[in-house]
Image 1 (spheres, one colour):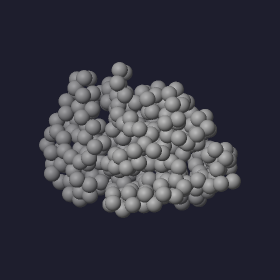
Image 2 (image 1 turned 135 degrees about the vertical axis):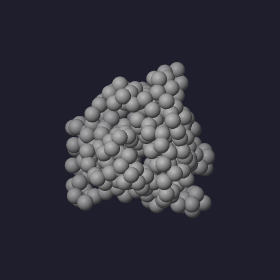
Image 3 (image 1 turned 60 degrees about the horizontal axis):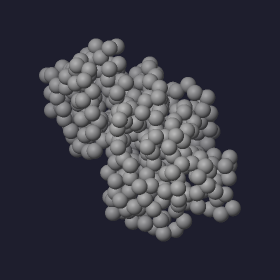
Image 4 (image 1 turned 45 degrees about the vertical axis):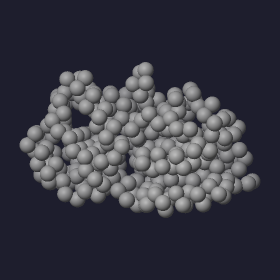
Length: 358
């Protein structure tokens, strides 16, 4: 059996490095499963090449060029949108590129296949739920200063306005912010019913801990669509009161596929393995999606693969997903923090990646 390489683009450093270890291990588990159950891709055993995209772009592009000059036949990426844009421009659609984490939506680049949740999916069913079930009418928005929070907050404003709510304030912070006093003062003065948090990784951890230390968690709900199990663990049970998140995946999800996935993950990496979460699990899905689509198309040519995607359905630990316009329609789960664990409290099936007509 010959061997071909798939490059896994993952942030092992920087603010998003929090998700790196679980993403790496989920990719390794998926590769093992594909090799054992499917004989690899097109009869070739797959090997993984990991590239840390949390470092300077010149460094990771140089590493990418090195693997592309070898036997790399596809990319699977779980990282921020700035990296996706840079990599997509660099490879020009010449090999398939599966992008897996939650992101801002509307990406249709050549050779690119997108599996992650969009803001429309995460918020369109959830924001009305907060108003109806928790009487949330006023919001404050805080996020990191980059593409995903900008788009998410813009769309949140539209949804909040449509349902009759009000945004009282908004702040964008650079990565690595260490002092949140001015934002917390604004929140304390404005006293919104809820705060939408689009901070990432360690920034979200630090903000949420500071929020609770000022006792704002006693009266204000927090909703963070990128607060997952790793982030919640970092925040700590003593600071997690009133935190909600929405996602296509939580470890507490009770599906047969998820129980099998978690059992295999623990068997391979041990009880002290990196905490599973939506970012890492999405990379697992990305590799399996690529393998199943390749088996259907009988090719790794990016354009031929694209011709087989419309209506393509596959089942993962999340449940069933259907591809439309190279994005996935999926079930979204709303979860509430209970200490350092999540509990799913509402399920919204069949949510498309974009609003009808888009």
